[in-house]
Each structure stands twice: as C-alpha cells, then as structure tokens.
Length: 344
Image (cartoon, rainbow, N blue to C red; front, top):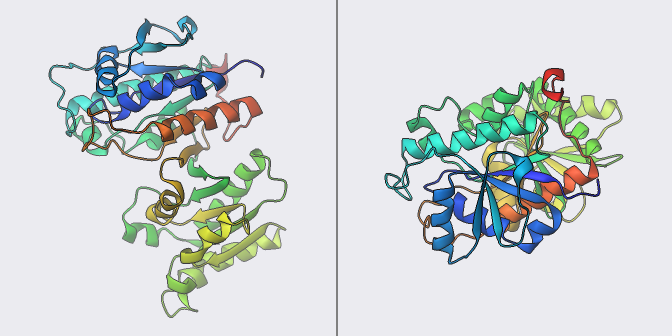
C-alpha cells in the first residue's frame, strides 16, 4: 500500500483518560504521517478533553469514515451521542462510562468487518463500568471475538522488538494455574509460531516461561512443568520447532530482550504484563491475534486518578496507532479471513 491507512480509534471510557490520549494522538505529526485516523465517540466529551489538555483543534463531525477531512489541526470524529456530559462523573465507575465505551467499540468492529477501515486502535475501558452498564463482556478481546465470530483469539504484546504471548488472560491466579494443561500449552505454542510466521520470522525461536519458581525444581515446587509444559515443548521440538523451556520466569524476559529468543509465551496475565511494563510502560502495545480484523491497543488502564486533568501521556496510544499502521502497510494478517458475507 502507498496510501496512509484509515484507522478507527475508540474513545474508551469517557470518565477516564481515553478522550485525552485520543485527541493528543490524533493531533500528533507522528500519527498524521503514517495514517488517516479518526476517533469514534462523543464529540462533546472530546471537546472537553481538548480543553483539559490545553489544546486547540477543530472537531469535524462525520457520519462515515469516507467523510474524514484528514487535515492538520482537525480531529475527525464519528460522533455518537451516547453520553450526557452533564451527568458524567470524571474518574468514577458508572454505567454511563461502560455504555459509551461499548457503543464506540461495537461501531468500530462493524466498520472493520465491512472493510471500511483498515484497523481499529482502542483506548482503555474500565471493567467495573462495563459491569455497571450490564455489558456482557469482561474486556475488549471478548467483545471483538464475539462480534467478529473469531474461533480462537490470543493476546500478544509487542515492545522494543520483543513479542510476548499470553496463554491465559483474565483468570484468577488459581484458575490460571489449573488451566495449564499439556493440550493448552501445545495449542499455545502452535498459535505463537503461526503468528511469528505471519510477522515475518522464518524460523522463530520461542521460549515458554515456567510457571513455578526455578521451573519447578523437578517437582519440588509443583508438577505443572513435568506434567504439562515439558511434554508440550518436547512434542513441538519433535516436529522441528525451535522451542526453549520451560525457562524460569525471573530470567526469560530478560534473555528474550537481549536477543536469545524472538518471543516468550507467558502463562498467565501478570507474568507477562509485569515484565513488559517494567521494560517500557508507555511503549507496550497489545495486539489481538486470531481475529478477522486488525486490532491494537494501549496496555494501560483508564487512570481515573488523573482523568480530566490533562496530565495523561499519549505515547502508548501513538505507539498503538503506529503498530496498526505498520501491520496494514506490511500486509500482516494475524487471524482468519473475513467471513464471506462481511467481505462482500
């Protein structure tokens, strides 16, 4: 592609920092140079965000991506009047925040499935606000999977050239440990290798993180490595795949960062999140694999404590847009093709 791709960004929870990081990102020269991005959300909330950030810009209300102005100093907004700005309480969990966040996400998915945008970049949402609004999803990934018909999705972080995959996501630690089975680890390895191939790695070297301290010490600290992880790795190696592990989690991310491995399969949410955010909190970008559409996201929350103050940094949002634009230009596909009826 020679044209800058059209990307939809979602406003996120309007009571959080999402609107502020959206306006900052869409006014940045970095984003304009690589994409034609617009935001989906309530223009009145975005106007308030501009004021909080001390920014001056024109909000161009549109009804379709094809109407974007794509001009310096202009933020194109697919306006949704789903929020009552006078009733919105900044920095608080409330149904209004969950409802508005979900409406923008749903609109972005519909546009991506209809191939009217090349990808979606999401601002942070609040899970408690979603529950307060009775939205039947715990997070973005579940929404995208349900509304795109994805068979099997997976989260990948990209940070400073390193890729971190997640075998489990939003589970309690006890449930995550119980979910570490040989079949699940084997399937996770296959998904990682497939994604790395789509990203251009010809013979990727994947490290599987250990679950227990010191990799379990031959059963002294737990049997998950013996019963599930090692057999799955051995089976993958027998098929000619370059898989290391289980590598103790206190060293595997460092080793990958210095180039010993191309990627790491993290076994549970915080194992990979903590490592990534310690490496570079602002430039960690989340990518959802297994979808028929491209979706990237910031990897931080709504930061209710500073919402509405204009203090929020847009670095992560800019990075998420840059990753989405790069993948579109490179023709990277990280999931199944669109259903035939959606592609028509």
